Length: 189
Image (cartoon, rainbow, N blue to C red; front, side, top):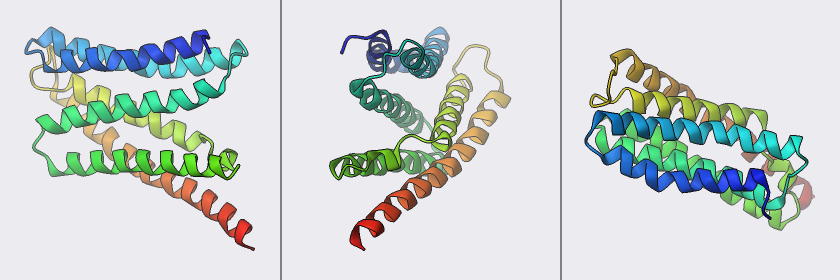
């Protein structure tokens, strides 16, 4: 369905390869540009949802594609950042975040198959988790040593938000799994 929100979501997915190229370019301006593209992806995540609701252009494609776009950009950025860092905690947080996204995506698909997708619909807690992930990654991108005008505090803020995002990632996963468990228990009775 060609709606403005869906076009914006497709554009967010299209940003990913450009983001990857800028991430690897050896110039400071390219690193800042990669962070800028990531920020645009975060803003368009909010914008496409807002426009879909305000213009009454919600669609099944948009409901499916929006979280997929989020997961693609977040996991892509985490893979790139982990490939540069030699920090075990960073890798652990990235694995937690990526694993949760795969688990919950599979759970939502399964719940949709049994007609109970609404029980694991995106929650406010999930939205907070996504914002924290975007903030963490944005600060980590801006705090890279080779980025122009970086300040050590920016990178530290990134790690701080990454810790909170990893915690929220686990918490939101447990909430979704609990909701699914309740549905499955009710079906078995």
